[in-house]
Amino acid sequence: MAAMLEVVNSGPLSTLQDLGRRGRMKYGVPPSGALDQEALAVANLLAENPEGAVGIEITYGNFSVRALAPVVLACAGAWASVSVDSIAVSPWTTLSVMPGEIVSVGAPAWGVQVYLAVRGGIAAPLVMGSASTCTRAALGGIDGQGRALRAGDLIATPDRPSPSPSPGPGHVPSLLAASTVTARAAAALAKRQAAFARAHSPAAASARCPVAIRVVMGPQDDHFTDGGRRTLVTEEFTLTSKADRMGLRFEGPAIEHSRGADIISDGMPRGAVQVPGDGKPIIMLADRQTTGGYPKIACVARVDLDLLAHLRPGDRVRFAALPAEEAHESLIHEQAASRASGRALRILIDGIEHVVTVCELQ
Image 1 (cartoon, one colour):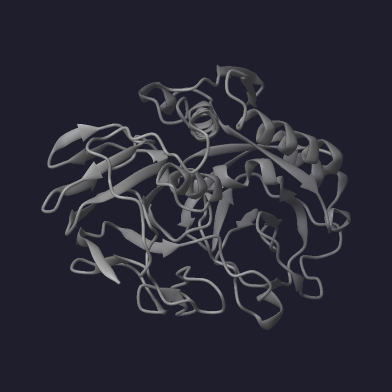
Image 2 (tube, one colour):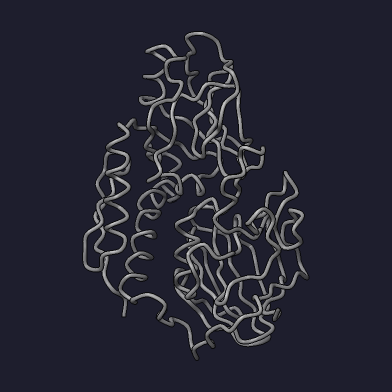
């Protein structure tokens, strides 16, 4: 293995993540993995890696690394300033870094999770088929035991040939057609900007600008009254400070149960909207427990799951119910739009349609 980077500042929380441990929940092992899977995939594609390669998930920025060898990096996810030796460079693109140079990721202007990919991938021990860090379960990560990154850690690439870095930032990937990668990056960025730019603008404190999150009702929505189901989809909810990689706890009007708040424990999918006895919803994320005994009134549609990675305490959300068929169609539409150069991407956020033309960047 060749050491490529040294962590100078790890920020509030930085971990190694891939797309998670599949098929292990039956053993009580959470899947973990990147909270924003699309952003990890985009960063990897820009760096000419497979979509699911191990990357660095940086929570709230304030992260920096020193290059120990010539290396190509790529950032995606939350909108944060990126600099090389204090010289600003564009996020959501690739950059070539020379030995001794320091790459810094600042605090995001909007969103939470920033993903840093290293061309050639990141070497880390696989635990149950994944290098994803789960600090709660002491699994994965740089040491295989669930440790987050800290200053002094060395980031290495696996022992295999990898492309040499190009001479300057803005390198266009050759693994896939440039138009495909840039269109996907532009579409992913457009969706996040539409969802969060208003919510995190200076005027947001006095404006009503909740983030719209689409959900599919069930599987236990029959455990709630008609009024309780209406509350979920007509009222606003505010994210509390109890938010981490395990889940997001919201404040708002109580969602009324019809027959108590306990069920026989069953499986817990990512994005499940669980409602305990106090009637306040909790959305489960990557490091969630694998089963739960509170009824799930709804599950976040896959098309909006990645947006959950960027909600901050104090953010307001509104849930919009979709039939399962419409949720599937929405996902298919956005996947197609994100891969087609020159097409318009239409995103409905809080009743307002945002139209972004996806084009190839020169």
